[in-house]
Image (cartoon, rainbow, N blue to C red; front, side, top):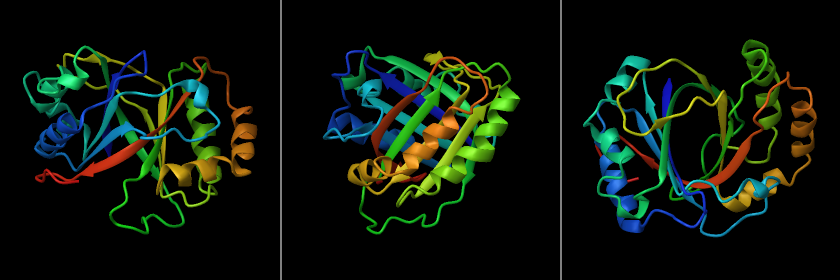
Length: 238
């Protein structure tokens, strides 16, 4: 599976998408041809305690769009298409003038003990992480991360999804700025409170211990908790 990420960043951390613009974005994402699923990330309504609050407030808005393969994804990245309009903030006045970036990556999903949310009406909380990189040896870095970190992540209380995203060469004609982070990953929980409980557990100590064993890399990492709206193709309703 292929994921296209688009991020609307406000360096001051003050902007966020309006309710009207979010509804318009949901409508647009639902109509993207051949997309299998769209995830819209918005800032939390209230801050939660987590170990990396110093990373900042996170983006004003972000998208993760799933496609079955790379050519299908690339077809959606043409000039003048729906994603091109979103990249320019067309019709989304609350996002005008923000720094918009995009990246296409391979999706790697890992098992969790319980993947469903107990309440079907819940808006989950996604913990979005990225490593800008680079690493001295990308193969060694990915091997270590994928062979060790997901198994620890799985022991977080009530984690509902674990995904890791690695780089791929892609072509596009979007007006937004391309980025090439060496890796992204995402943990999904039922709510911001569930995320906070998980990250205050002893599991975070094991994560940090494994972090110290990572092969050499630079660029650090960033962690942002975001509310998540899921959009299915052909419907404007989450």
